[in-house]
Length: 300
Image 1 (cartoon, rainbow, N blue to C red):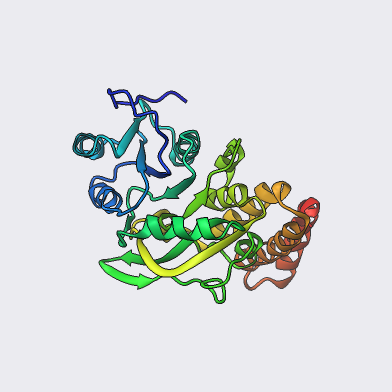
Image 2 (spheres, one colour; image 1 turned 120 degrees about the horizontal axis):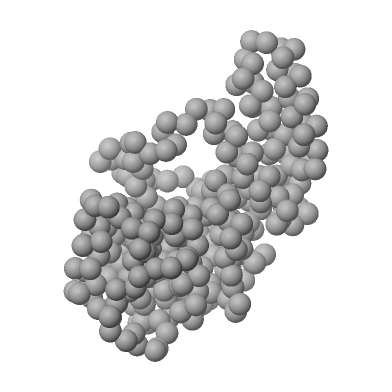
């Protein structure tokens, strides 16, 4: 993937202790708040914000360049010459942050923002003290229609570390902008993640490396929900099919215990699809489920 990095000066060779990953596309209404929430962080270590702009067509790029000029030592821009798509851009930026050699990588998409100026410090302190955890996230508020609402994390996972399998058993209750993970030697975010409908869940699988995931039970970020977002227009049967696609794509990269959980999820989603398609036709519903179970035998 070719990209144009408009940082003209030679970058300081010293690696940041924390690399902050950010992706953006046409976020002119939100990107300034996102960047401000990161450069305001108060830490006793060096950090750097790496922003991948996916060839925005609005004023996002202009705003990025203005903030780069304002914070030349804190912000690095990766300005793609053509649109890669959300998932490839995300993978590109993950690998870029990994290759900086930073010990930790924190995440924030260009339309979300952080609310606690000590967020990075608190998460680094936690991961330094808990070597059995590779991922640390925080509580978050959801912002929709100018109203903030606490994002739910099922108990006891708001206070008790857990394994990746719980994200499969329950649902993805981690908001992207709350995440920090431990960089690792030879870490690669594989291209197969771009085939997943929920790429963040794939990333958590790769970076958790069978270690624990832990929540700091404090609100430190805001996840923005757009009224015209993709999921607001998806029909229930389409949503189930997306889950099915996710489960089948990630299945072969899971442990045996995780596969057992996903097998049950596939059966449930197949049943739901049949119910949505034939709500009042019992025989058709059963036949539809039967044939789909046969087609899905390798996952069951």
